[in-house]
Image 1 (cartoon, rainbow, N blue to C red):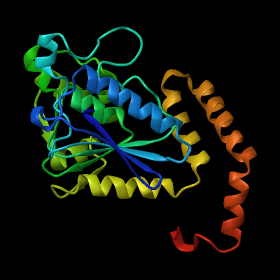
Image 2 (cartoon, one colour; image 1 turned 135 degrees about the horizontal axis):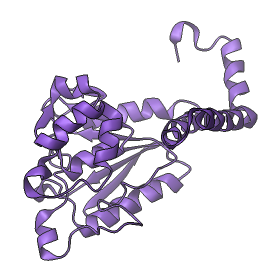
Image 3 (cartoon, rainbow, N blue to C red; image 1 turned 90 degrees about the vertical axis):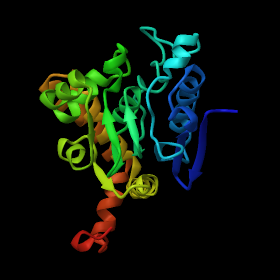
Image 4 (tube, one colour; image 1 turned 30 degrees about the horizontal axis):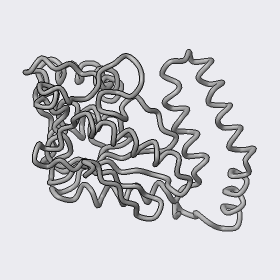
Length: 254
């Protein structure tokens, strides 16, 4: 039985880590299944947005330390997939994390890999692997500072403390806060909202925002132009402008 479940809701793919007995900790086979799930989502023209969540009221407790001790843990190599599977991928479509309970250690890194994070008020983000000598190997030392700033990131990375609720929202770690038990539904609704937009434009702007990190300002602006002009030349922009000219979207309506 796979430890990763995949479901679809119209244009939304829902990927669920299903190992509640170990708080959805990721072993080697689960990492492989996550990589396969998101490759399939990215290649499926009928799917626009994905939601990543965990079963049993927990997002993910990180790498399965017992599997590491037993020799069946996630692979750690300099190339190929990341230890938790999908974490070295840059998909062409957005992914939203629906976070209930713990999103700690590698689970935090999975949440950081996602484009947006919808968190329950009692969800906890943290570098809990600090206490066990397990390093962040799935982009945590890169994505966390980029999302919340270096000072906030070091506060989490060095102390290993948990961050929850309003503090997570204030730091920019959570994008939306919802009542406990409501993260999945809220994330799926947000995914549907994103799926309603013209997709070529949404995806090209998203891609440019990621690619700019490694570029100088002139190169980043040139790259933004390349993505933007391709969208314009596709006809999507004229189609949207025509809808607006005919009366759609007045006063912020969609």
